Image (cartoon, rainbow, N blue to C red; front, side):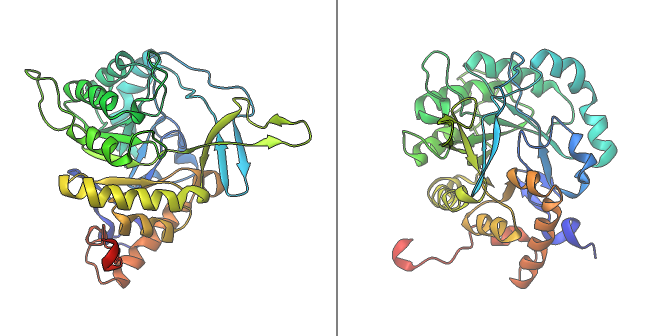
Length: 334
């Protein structure tokens, strides 16, 4: 029997996609495709989500844009990426071959500031071979309103409806923010219930998968200079500090929205050890994203997957999927 991250007990069904295990490398932490192979055998993780692509290239924010925190990491990279034209010309044609050569399962990622931005990148990714799924990062401010798509159920519903008509050949992952002005449950429902426009080529539901959640807005100040430590003043907090917040969000969304709709969740936020990943699974996540941990120990995803295999066996499961949503809560809180 195979052991560790390729143990059959870890085989994961993510919206019809079969992954060797539930551990996924988060967007923006492992390059565009296979660059992280130098530090970690990518054939031993479930999938890798590439850096988010925007319609136009972006240099991102000035240094410093990543700093340590006592309980994690703050980043304000600013969506630095090669842009759609370079991605289409230099990367898209080789995705399928490069992924197959090392046994990698790659997912794409899209970000933007208007519906038109998202649609342009979505069209290119829909045509690319070797990308079975595409993540939609909805945490960027819309250029027309100043509000991110992930903060408004109506705006998110419009965006996902348009994208659903374009991303006809891919599973759509919608990555939600942990901090929204509208209730999280309404945002999650909007992502799932959005449909392609009537008469379009696809009238299926919106999100195939939810990703919960993105970083928390945060700030750090140098007390001697009295200046913000990040060049952008504020950034996103990731790492252990936000893990308990993500556990709660996953539990609530799974129980109230995702489970009834049959939509799987990728849990994301502060997973450094297998116990953190196991918490997400018990809360309702089918798969688990890792990001900040890669900066601490690039091999941590292998350790997490191996720990999950041993844990699932101790729990008496024949497959780790049997433990999704398996938290035993007090009867009065159900």
